[in-house]
Amino acid sequence: MRYIKKDGVEAISYTPEERKKALDISLTAIASALGYTPVRAGSHYHLKEMDSLIIYNDRSWNRWSGKGNKTGGTQIDFMMEYGGAASVPEAIKRLLDFSGEGMAVAAVPVANNSPSRNDGFSMELPPKNNNFRRMYAYLIQTRGVSQEVVSDFVHRRLIYEDSVHHNIVYCGMDPEGNIRYAGLRGTGDIYGKSFKMDVPGNNKNYGVNIVNKESDKLKVFESVIDCMSYIDMYKDNVSNKLILGMVEDNPLVQFLKDYSHIKSISFCLDNDEAAHIALYGRHDTEGNITKQGLVEKYKEQGYSVRVEVPERGKDFNEMLKSKLTDQQNEHHVLSEKENSLKASIPEENDERAEPAAAALMQQKRRHGR
Image (cartoon, rainbow, N blue to C red; front, side):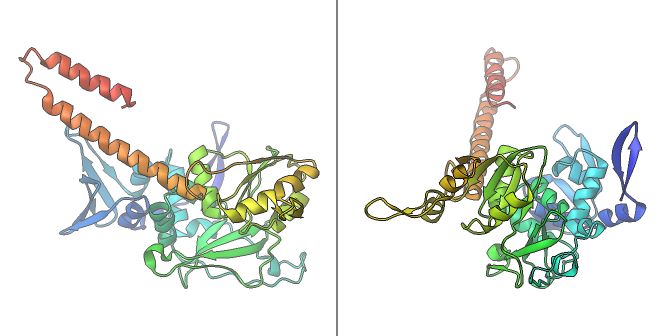
């Protein structure tokens, strides 16, 4: 990968070798990661959700529309058509991220390998898998996160799939780009028993974070998946993000030391008792404060503080999945209404044809279709 100037604009250019690696990736694996269900039919596959789309030799595809139009091509074309990539370079980047090659382009030093930081912590990261298929499948299919957001976290080197147990590895970095914290999250919701744990030797004063010095706003989350879900729902690609990995604020204390541009803090924690106590503190039976809450603590330090609670469910991922279910149900109901209207439209020479067709068009306009 290299950067080039094209018409005065900086753009990414990929080598022939990188392009070949993108075209070597299993197309059925890509489709599965994007939420589709490949179904084998003889020597090829079709998708359960689109039986008009056929995958050949796991490397190319075609789709015929009802009007006889034909689309198709390679993995790159598939990513542009169904994976949200806006250009060929972006499609290649997402494919390389999916395969694990994207992280190999720009490796991140681990803190214990950096002689400039000697804080008594020694951590060995789990080895990176040669592809991230299980991680993508888990985050997209089980947790409802979009492929675009997953790829962005991969590109930022915040997550990867380990090669031994296929866990998701979360990486928290210091301002120099050294990984100081790493946590594991099992993908066992679909591949076996899941679990969560920190990588031994990590520094819990750091958390997974996204820094944007052009913004003075910080959003604080309990988990990486909640953060990803929030970004998906609110399209927030501007504010700084920090994942605590707990309800204690050690990573927040460190983050504010490292980044003095923060003026506003939004706590986006779970909607449960533990988070409520963390935010607002604990009081005895007489109303005396026995533990100060995060809201009051950081207001006293001069920050503008607010709390964002998920509109439904106990956390932002539950809220995302609930919204996706609503969208699927709405689409199903709309499709049934359209089919009913189509069935009621009489032949062209019938005097009722024009009003019935108009009713169908009105139905589509009402739903933005």
